[in-house]
Image (cartoon, rainbow, N blue to C red; front, top):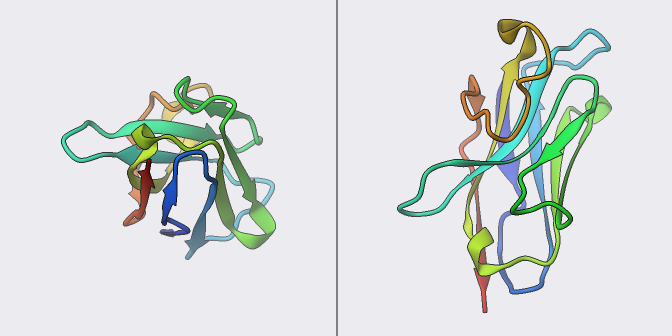
Length: 131
């Protein structure tokens, strides 16, 4: 599986962006068991989880983005999205798409933004918010 992000851009405070992650080298089916998520890292800061979605479509969002960001996926298109609204300067970061097989951890309950030990990572897309 390979992950390729796009959609990063420079926008003003209050603006919106939609990030896209295309999954290649793997085809999702009803038996797929991947937890997927969006993570971000700003210069000088730790990588942090933004949002995750498990194999049954249950999503979780970090408190810092709750109500502003929405993770979603289209398994038919092998694509993961992150809709970002009301962007703030603190949202500026490199955003990464990531995935891990849930079977490694015995189920889906670990699939939350605090879990950053994903196996597969994209190269990132840069989001810059200016005031």
